[in-house]
Image (cartoon, rainbow, N blue to C red; front, side, top):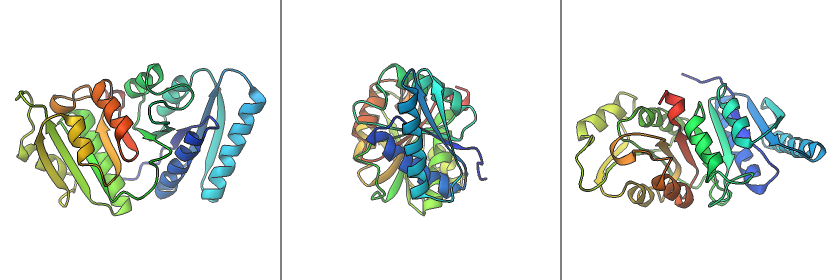
Length: 259
């Protein structure tokens, strides 16, 4: 079912934000939904309006027919984006790799979004935002967030006619909440992903995700879970994936699924 809620993108005038705008514009056009540009500021109103105007102009160049709304918000970017996420289907931000727009998404801002955003979050690095990838890779651990990751990833792949690889990684030395082959197959097949490649693997989740994502166009992860992806977008695993992923990363925050 088509989600008609808008897509929100955080902007700040940086090159990273420009790349995020481009990614979000393509996604909004694919779904025929409104794109909302949000610029959070604490001062410098004139300069901030120029940032907004330039962002709108970029969207118009890319997709002249798209419906776009832009607004200034006063305060921290994370606060503005968390608030906007309550009425959005997706929030998109630009990353500079180890740091992220307007200060950092590695730290307080990132924790705010991954913990409190009410919809999926996509982080786009400016050097890894192209469409060269040939598949969607989804991390699955049986949690509510990873169930939503399956929905998100499979929908994205269908709209772009891309193959899907679903990975259930289990840390060595534990049998707690291990996902069986049958559980993994059932979870994917009941969503129509009968052609998806299913991989069960034992070892460090982040390492295996990265090794099996070299040809990915998008990686999709749940923010929290059990077993292999427990606490994924809060601790070291999340940092590893976000910093080293070969493509944009979509995160399903715990708050987006009531977790």
